[in-house]
Length: 456
Ligand SMILES: [Zn+2]
Image 1 (cartoon, rainbow, N blue to C red):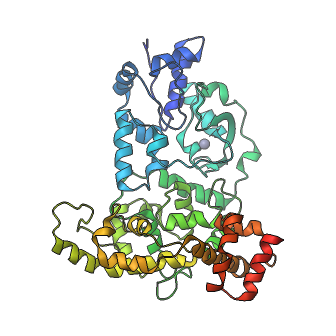
Image 2: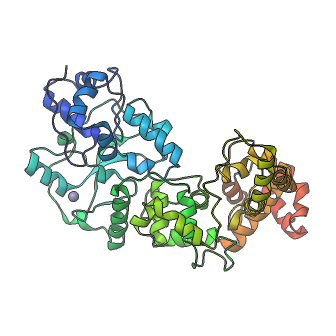
């Protein structure tokens, strides 16, 4: 039974708060504390979120801090929800505040191959101990990509507490985990460039949480390519590969789990991914202020002015079928056909990146339409059918694109099969199948070179 719960400190993780509850409770084992707090005794405490707490604990917790304050100010929620689509933002917020949702299903939490651990700043720990008699885990030290404490300008240090999706059931008490070592010169070796980017990440994390409006963060960032060398003068073509190379050069190896592949960038720009760190890197590189990036109310303006794209028609709600007469559909079809034509072309050509196969599904997703919407729009459907290509044909086209990309854009002199496979994820057997189609997309010399890859 919970008799006393400590107060929660500013910017403290809920996990840290629960661990301090265990430390203060005098229980011999953390399992007793878990039993008090969670629905089941074998529930894992969650470092970045809250975990399934029981009714009694919820009642006591809410008398100290409301659930929405807890989610927004004491978990890593803003990092994973800030740039999600509006629908998902709303569902995630409601479910997590209600206490019933699993954040790993509701939010988009990137999985990383390397192990992440809880970090701390030696000077923050020292200050906490002077002020409160104990230290705690700060949210600001767990933001992905951040390397320094922006308050003290010193490098963050690692604890041994792992943050993983297979959550450990243990409650690691901060006071036990964070050593009382003193500050040393090693702690201040972060570069100024690193500190500036960390400051940017901090601001994007802490600015007031806003629900997205109609457009995706990818569209907003794309609109900021205007006037840069990453957009052709007519505004029709994005030079994503060039942008990618420049971003890699700009950040170097300094951002763990940052943008590391061309497709990371493509996914952000097309709105298929909203990874907080990647979005921040891209926006920082393009000189977009944290305020602009985190105020979706102002995005429409920038998108409307952009050469790159006319925004999708708003306000007119084409997302439901109810009440639409045949005449309505004919009008919608006529109105939408030019846009579908442009989108299909962009998908086919890949906008400077990997070309894609034009399908009804992908066009509907890009238009943010429900499935099978295009079945009601004959003109739009006809446009998509004009782009029809078999998989073999598409693979052939993709292979030729990849080969040329490696040769010219990356300037590789020697290309091996692995390079091609890594770029387009094509299996050898599928490559064999697409050989007869290569002639539609390139010359005999290139075909010979491509065939040489698989034999060599
Ligand atoms: Zn600090």
